[in-house]
Amino acid sequence: MTPAVTDPCVLVVEDDTDLRETLAELLAMSGYRVETAEHGRAALDNMQTKKPCLVLLDLMMPVMDGWQVIEAMKHDPELKDIPVCVVSAQAQSAPPGSKCVIKKPTALSALLGVVAEHCLLHHPP
Image (cartoon, rainbow, N blue to C red; front, side, top):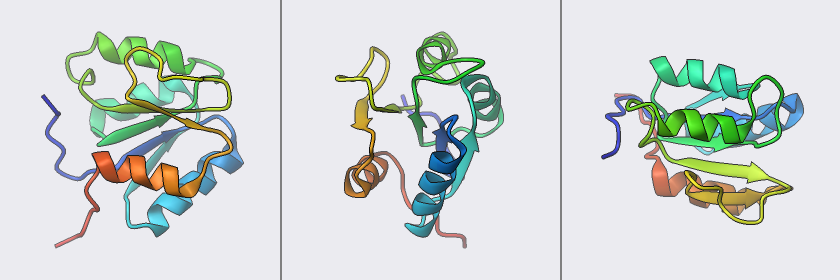
């Protein structure tokens, strides 16, 4: 079952500031509401208050890496159904608990296609 999302957003979890800001800007320019986190611990904290429609997750990060985030989400009833797409230069296939992999460098069309599958564009009333 998918969590109730009243104000859908995409959560971009990436420790590289330039890449995180670029992805967030591209998604925002495409009409999506975006939240960001610089590491896994910040991502989990963010998800406790804002349930994203999709998490775009880097694997190699300080503080808490992407594998640890996926594992923590699997064991949290509030987070386990939130889809995760790994964005990585290293992953060849989707790690257990994630829906897909987008290879770095990221093709914008692939990124937007994955986001469109999981998130409705947010149109304020």
